Length: 227
Image 1 (spheres, rainbow, N blue to C red):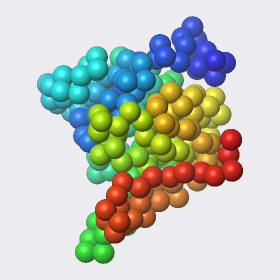
Image 2 (image 1 turned 60 degrees about the horizontal axis):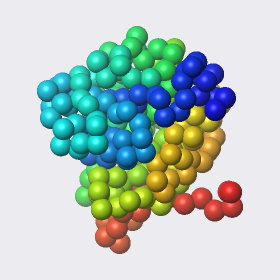
Image 3 (image 1 turned 120 degrees about the vertical axis):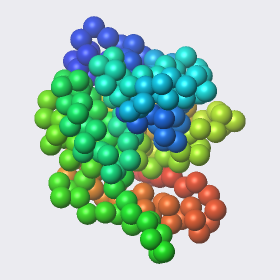
């Protein structure tokens, strides 16, 4: 696969080690489980390395755990799944360890009140744009924003039929992330534009949460007209 070789010389797609920063949360553990089932080596990261090790043992499938720092150091490609409140601080602390790597940001800046979920205004335009501003030597890509953590973690589901919108400015990185998504049973990676479009993708999560609450479901996204 040309893009994989270009970004990670000498490695095939399935040879990449995938780290998940903030990997002990519901989204992180769910993504870790699905990626491990797809055949990837996965490391769950946490501020508390011991917690990450314990969580990885619970999830199984050969997943390992480490501190966020060790996770970033040992991984080829990293997924950021931290709470929005700690997004900026966490990434700034890992800038050197994430240099020259593809970083998938799936963080959705949202607030909640009596009316439900709503998107928060981000000075940089989106969580991913904030990440790219901090990680100037990394290739940041938006993806996995709309997958229900409940579905990801449900081991009775062999696959999850959903499209994953992939957004970013670096074509080899977005191509690689699409290939990665396509390895997960039922998922399809769909390119959805440059980083300037990331804000809409992140904000759509608030609409999906509203649907879930009204219809008692775990909604996702399907794109028609794309083969």
